[in-house]
Each structure stands twice: as structure tokens, then as C-alpha cells.
Amino acid sequence: MKTALAWAHMDIQNLLPTYDLAGQLGINLRGNETKHAPCPFCGGVDRFAIKYSGPANKQIWMCNQCHPTWGDAIEFVKLRDGVQFKNAVLTLGGDLTRPQKPTMKRPPPPAAADYDTPPAKEWQAAANDVIHDCEAYLWGASPKAGAARGYLNGRGLSDETIKNYRLGYNNGDRKISGLWLFEGFTIPTIIYSDIWQIRTRTPPKHIGRTVFNGDRTLSKYEGITGNKIGLMGADKLAMAHTAILCAGEFELMLAQQHAPTSVACVTFGSETKKLSLRWQIALRKITRLIVAYDNDEAGDKGFFAVREIVPGALRARVPKGKDMGEYLAGGGDLTTWLADITSTPATATGEPFEAALFEWLDTAGYAPQVEHDGRILAVKAAT
Image (cartoon, rainbow, N blue to C red; front, side, top):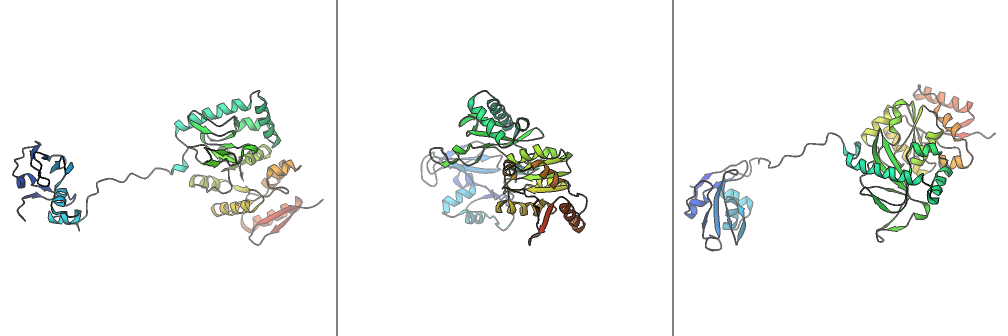
């Protein structure tokens, strides 16, 4: 014995001592039988209970008044001596310098990054209900649905394109199959039959409208809880020699409608979203990537971010307007422009490629210029 107390043994690894509390208190313990005695701390008669815990391999105790939860020998010494955990362990003969056995295992790392996998099937089932419901409304006979279709046609989208991309219209703020949507056009991202996200395009008159009792206002695009960012159009990459990375969904749909059939048009829905590993790999595999972001500072910044991931990416700018929609609305020949930027030599790299590119631009009626940051600008020569 080290003191007047009798020690059975100390499990150093777990710092869980089997302490002869019963012997110190003059209590005869048998098996798992619980014994009661006056509390050595508050003096209450029969408030103190002590028993042997087989699974923990130690004696445990409690007092209905001053310690109403089960404690072990360390807890007993802490209360008796008025000390902290460390000193209680040392009093019991523990060695704090020895490694402790972890009490919990770390969860294994996920097999794949969460953002590189589509949402759960339950969420996709609800999202599919959203798509069906809003599609049905868009193609319905109501005047509001007709106006919505007219808006999309006015942006240059054909009825066939609208149906291919399963656009719809949500008529009012509401829940569909448990998913909350604000009023607006519904734009799903579906890749190989998996629904990754649905975004709503807020009608211009509702942008800035106060929602949720003034908590916030509506932005141009709104997402649905549970969305995951996917590369819209990625399922077309396998059969394409060239990909055009667009600023947003409407630009993608317009570009795919006018581009050569061997070209895949893709988007993340924004020029600022970061590319996760899955989509970085997908874009690196393509023979030629052309970034057709908006003709502004944000578009340039987004292009340089893509260039860091896909060094061979090229920058394309419509000859007039901010984006492809404005170019088309202003009378531009979008079909010819897309054919022009996707028919450049695709097999050469480095200086031979640049030389071939300049030669082609000259013959196509463009005036190529090399900017100080290495960008090649091609302005259509005046006729």
C-alpha cells in the first residue's frame, strides 16, 4: 500500500484505475452487487452507492445528493482531495508521461470529395418533381407561361433548346416535394441522368425583392438547398474535340444551339466558381478548351483562373457586345463566329500552334494582336 488505501491495480494506458474504494469504506462487494453506505463527503445515510463494473473493470460510485452520476477512482480522489485530474491520477500512481490509448477512432476519410459527387438520390427524386412541375407550367396555356416562353425565345433560345435543357417556370414562392423555390425560371444541371442542381433565374421585376420578413433580398440567380455545383454539359465532352466554357447557363444553351455538332458547351453557372478536381480532370482531357467568358474584367479574371488549371486554354471574345446573347441580339452572326473560333488548328502546340493560329486569323479576316499579358486578341477587320 502507498497510503492507508488499498490499490488493486492501475491500468496506465486508459488511466482508469481499479481502486479498492469498497475496502477503504469497509464495504464487502460481491460481483456486480450494489452496496449502499453513508456518504464520506456529505454524510448522508444510504446516499452513497458503490459497485463493481465488469465492462470497465473498476469500482464505480455515486451519491444521490453530492455526486448524482457514476464516477471512478479518479473522480473520487478529485472530490476527496479537492484536486484536478492530473494530481488525482498521480495520487493513484498513474504516469501521465506515458501514451494514452485513444478512446475514439477517427472516422475514415471519404472515398471522394463530397463536392465531386452528385446529391443523394432522395434529393434528386424531389428535384425531379420540381423539374416536372415547372416544365408543365412553362408549356401550359396560361398568359404568364406564354410570356415566360416569349422571354426565352427573345433571348435567342429555340423551343427545342428549351425542351432539351428541361427549363421550366416556378409560378410563385413555394415548396415542391419539400424543396423551397422562389418564383422564376428553373434551370437544372443534369449530367448523365444525375441532377446536380436547380437554379432559378429571378424575373427582372423581382430582383431585389425583400423575402423572409426582410431578412434578405432576391438576387439574379437563386439556388435550392441541397444543390451541388456540377459542370453543366459535361456529358457531351466525351464525343467532342473542342469545349467552350461559357459564363452561365443561358450562354451555354445559346452557344450549343449555334455551335458545330462536334463542340461541347459547358458552364459552372458563373465565371468565379472554383473548379473541383473532378471537373478539372474533365476539362484537361479535352483536346482544346476555349473560354468564352464576358467581355469585361470579371471575364478576364475568370479566364486567367481557368488558365492556371488548363494551361492551353484559349480566350474567345465576341466581336461586339458583352456576351453571346448581346452579340446575337445586336445582329451578330453567332453561328459563323462559333465555327470560326472552333475550327482553328487543334494538333499543333507552342510556337507552331501560334504561327498557325495567326495565319488562320489573317485568312479569316481578323487582325490578331498580342497583349502584354500574352493574350491574343482577334478583332474582325472592317470591310
